[in-house]
Every structure is written in C-alpha cells, then in structure tokens.
Image (cartoon, rainbow, N blue to C red):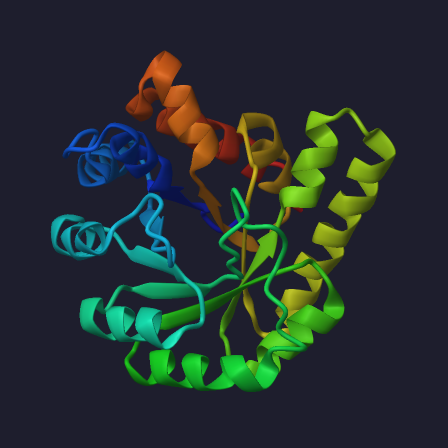
Length: 250
C-alpha cells in the first residue's frame, strides 16, 4: 500500500495580495486554517529578507494558530536562524534567495555552499527542528545534503513544470527522469524526499506516482485557483489529484 502523500500548502501569496493594498486582509493565518480544514497536512511560509509577502508576525501567528506542522522556508542567514530559534517551527527548509528574483530560481547550492550551510543545519537540528534542503534533482546535490546532515530534501520541480507549461515535451521528459532518478536514490541515502515548485493539479497527479516522494509543497497555483473556485475547493481538488496519482505508485 503506497505511503500517504502529504500536502503542504504555502500561504505566501495570500500575504502578497494583502501587502498589495496594505492592512490586514486577506490574512494568511485564516488561509492556513481553511487549508487545513480542507485537507492540508501542513502549512509552508517563506519569510524573505525583503518581507515581500510573509511578515515576522505572520510566522509567529501561524505557529500559534495552526494544529498541523509549520514549515518555515528561509535563507541561511543569521537573522533567519534567530527567528527560527525563537518561533520553533516543526521544520525549516533552507532555500536560495536573491532580491531580484520573482520566485525561487533553482535549488540551493549545497556543494559550493557546504561550509556556510553546515552550521545552520547543525543549529536547527540541535533545536529539534526538522531540516530540509531545497535542491536540484541531481545525485551530487543529494550526496551533499547527506554530508550536511540534513534528513530531508525537497526536489525542485520548477524546470519540469516550466517545460510542461510551454509544451516542450522532450525537455519535460528529461526533467521528469531527473526527478524520478533523484527520488529513487533518496532511499539508499536514507533521505526523506519532498518535492515542490510550480506544481498544478496535473503535474501533482503525475509526480504523486513516485513512491519515494512523501510530501508536496504547493502555494502559488492554489492561491491563484482560489480566485476562481475558493481556497478550500482548490485544496480539496489538489488532495484528490494527489490521491489519484498515488494509486499509481509502484
């Protein structure tokens, strides 16, 4: 029987809409509670250096309000480490971050950044926080994550999803094979395997068939769908798509 595939709902872009106008609404905490009621297994939020969407008090309120695990996406900086130590989320996912990017572009450089990243992984683990590395689906990135002591990796699905959106079937097939091979390798390396970035109903259904993947983190698409069908219905439809794909897991 395939392992239950967890859905982490990212509420960043609820905060983006709020910040566009100022004020307190729409509230990402309310969105998180609604997502959990609709079937989310956890909530993800990325506190960026420039605070373009999630704010510091959002993280504190999320930790206090939700009954499911909170996954704190963060850059490996002393400021973010201090905030994580204060809030004590269930998990921290270390991600690359550039001020000029619209969204996260590619996986973390776990090879070149090894010496910088190691103390962050160590401190977070010492505090009892599960650490994941947001990486490209490549063997060397998986092995570097093991070397860092991270128990979890999140495979960057962005290149695959981009190829699907643009109808580039050959590139999509190549990128999915990279994801499949990386996910398969995580078992031997004793890494818990997550995936995310750019997923929609169809791509989530497809990647759900990879049995090693135990969690998908999805945000922008769900918030976009919420404009048309409501957040709760978007989460329910995503949950159904994932469950449908999971039935095909070998």
